[in-house]
Length: 136
Image (cartoon, rainbow, N blue to C red; front, side, top):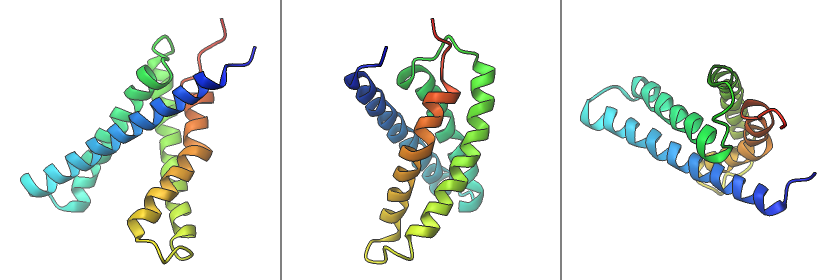
């Protein structure tokens, strides 16, 4: 039986909320590391990315997809692999969009590219592969 459209829409909204929270954590850790702890920006990016990815993983597992009954180890491994692919796609999308959308600030182009990558790749992979639970 097909899932009602409203359920799919709310799940997508929950994924956007988790992504927003992960972005906020990422930027907060980055700013803390650079401005307070005085870590070089390139080095500070590492804990920021890890913090954001952690929020993304657990937020999607519990809030977006409600997949707590799935194997944590399996989900974490799949998430790590596909998160690397998502980063590569984000970068590639940005490289394609940025020279063509010069009327927009590069930060806006980055958000646009990230959203396109999320809708076309990251969200479907998380829903259909990483956090998919066996049918009852």
